[in-house]
Length: 116
Length: 112
Image 1 (cartoon, rainbow over the protein chains, first blue to last red):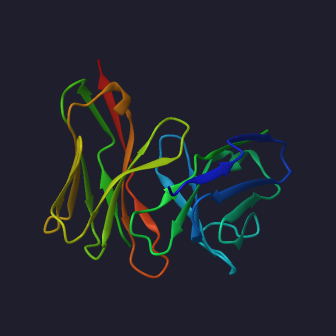
Image 2: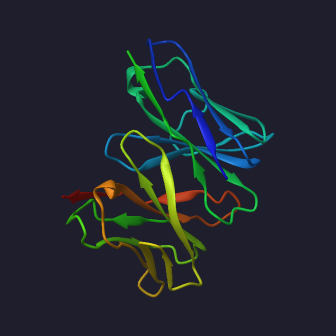
């Protein structure tokens, strides 16, 4: 149980375009989802926390207008990278937490974004 | 804020035991986790421990928690080449968001 599906696995886009990444909890309801960014050989950097039906809470230094997060249902959260630039190229990972969160957080398989 | 530290690299021979260490600063964390990340993949929950426990064993994995020293360790018995990966310790932060605070990750290299 507790499977999180993240799509796409990888995407290449042109500078200036927008890219949407989806994160779905397949067999549980996720009241809270987290979006992380990971640079090569580094740890996960939390970008934002989204709760179903409310606005996301962004970490300091993360541009909310650039990284749009929508958590419209208990099983789906999306991250849209708007007007992407090469410096946005990274590995993005989502994580979902059911309530109550006794057994940790389930992570998606990640999305490798390359902006050319 | 919370700070979680891990050594960056560990190399062992196949069949040996591996011990990955983690230290943290916030003693109020109630859940402590170990995750495994293989190249290009997401994070896989290996095991977790509650803060009121000292030790937890799950097959080849043993987690030790020393709350006094704020030290968490993961021991992998009979390490296999398939155990080669990055291992992250993570603590559940205080507050309603319950966000995880990650260490830098320890790269485990298992030599045949």
